[in-house]
Length: 334
Ligand SMILES: Nc1ncnc2c1ncn2[C@@H]1O[C@H](COP(=O)(O)OP(=O)(O)OP(=O)(O)O)[C@@H](O)[C@H]1O
Image (cartoon, rainbow, N blue to C red; front, top):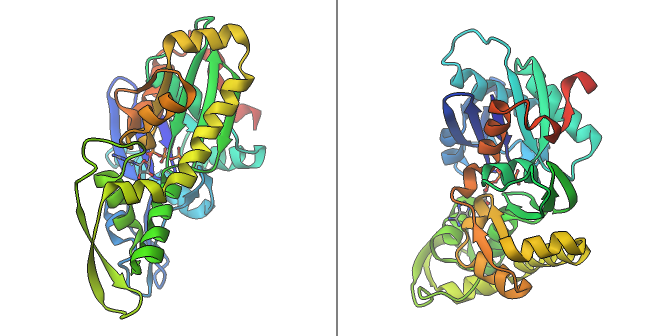
């Protein structure tokens, strides 16, 4: 089983079957009964809409486990769902985690997987898994650059011969873009909006670079700060793009810094092959154009950016012998 345990979404790949689960990393807990009310998509629908005794939370923040018990519970639920309620034949699990996490954070992920029933747990750095999932030839002696923009972290890495030559991880990604939109709506339109609405604005009309859709409009509903009453405001893409400029420049700067440090031979390979974007954040309209414009290097979006990491873990599972050097840790080394 391969798992992308992400801040925003968790995906599971089963060897021989492909991606069998893709759910938001959200858990709704009934605090009176101390039990999970919903996990995944159902819990996400409850975000910001729960009564006092129910909390809908994300157990991961910035790509790492922030709430261990809830993360373990979520992981168990997902693994059980994949097994269709049958008894778990403790599987071998490969989990993608951000490359910048500490040893303590790595052990927390491994422990959660072991508690959830895994026999052998292998950790793979997310950029390596994303590059494999995006179809980059990571086993060859050639430079590949992958930029994985998730919910909580953006990872930029240069890979060659199954390994990371250099990488940079910044804790700014899709969530910060949504947060920037929330703050803008509050400051400029006096409108308080929830997390889900901010994400909807980002997905529907925002862009990182001017596009032909710039004249499009969207009606946003929220709570007016001054009157305290519900109100609808009409917004356009350019103002939303402007509101995201700070987090976007953090992402672009991370790419530039990594390129500046890349050894010349590998830099030449990257100029030939281009930069590959993966992760849900890669779906932001115009982000490839912005990065291409800022770096002068052709930038591509992976065919299925949201699934790159989990597809990479799956490919590793299915080619265990050939790709055996890609792991950053395994449970027997805990
Ligand atoms: N069409 C879209 N346009 C812009 N952003 C999008 C789009 N679709 C998804 N996203 C964003 O992608 C992010 C989730 O990406 P992904 O599932 O790759 O992250 P993750 O793996 O859970 O996070 P991390 O790698 O940080 O742990 C969210 O912030 C989401 O809002």
